[in-house]
Length: 148
Image (cartoon, rainbow, N blue to C red; front, side):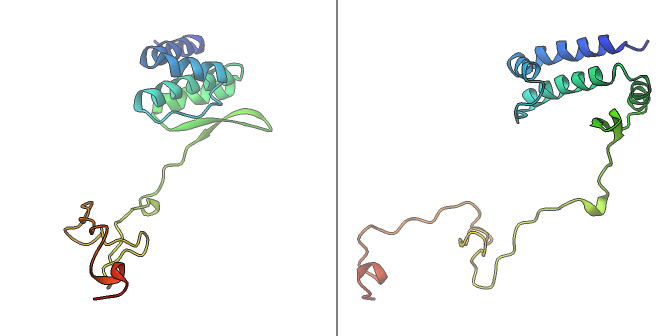
């Protein structure tokens, strides 16, 4: 049994309010023009409200509605866009494996200092540990007027 568009919208709204009622209410009031929250429950509720708005946008366009329902059944990612021809269903392209960005920890230069942060926290065994601070009135080195 497939749901009607109205049933889908009501179900999404109900589930969003059950998940995070304050965020769902804010998203509903603003039409999802407010900043998307970053918490997992809050962002999921915001996404459900946005999806309900998408279904509402295409509910009058039989062709777009049919395309969206077919993509839903197939499990294909899509989004709703507004263009010169009105609201349209657009496929979301999945990133190719070679286009995936891999972040790596920068390699330590020869002088053991990180060129980005100018600290030697990237040396093996130094990750995140703080070195003890020197005393306020050092008697050696540059703090003592150059006497070594």
